[in-house]
Length: 166
Image 1 (tube, helix red, strand yellow):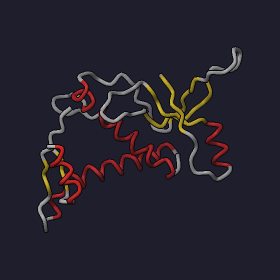
Image 2 (cartoon, one colour):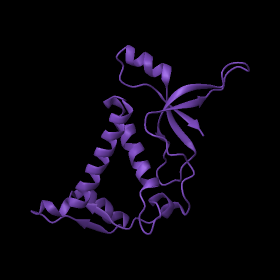
Image 3 (cartoon, one colour):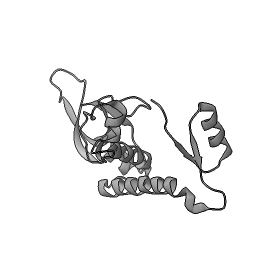
C-alpha cells in the first residue's frame, strides 16, 4: 500500500525518513503554529476517544495504550469517509468482518482445558489484535476477569492480555 501524504512538524528525523522512503511530506510553516492544526486535531481526537473508552469501561489508566489502539481500530471501521466507505474498507477492499465490541465489555474467552471442564471463562474485551499493514486477523484482545480481580486486589496495575479468536 502506498503512503499518500505525511504531515510533519519539521522535525529533521521525520522529514529525512520520509524523504528517504519517497513519501510526499507536508511540513508546518515555521513561526506559524496554527499550520500544525491537522496533526494536532488528530492527536487530540485520539486522546479524547481513548480517555472516553477508559472512563466508560471503568478500567484504570494502566490500560491507556490498549484504549488508544482500540479507539484507533474503532475509528477505522466505523467512521465513513469518501462516500460512505470506511478507512479499513478503502485500504483492504472489503469491510472488516470483526465485531465492534465496546471497550471493557464482558465477553466469554474459550479455553483449551480437560474434556468436562468449562469451555469458556469470563473476560474483558479490550480490542482487536492489529498487525501493521495487514488486515484484521480475527483475533480479539481479552483480559481474564479472575486475573484482573486478583491484580486489582493486590494493587497490581496490569494483567496479561490474552488473544482470543472469535
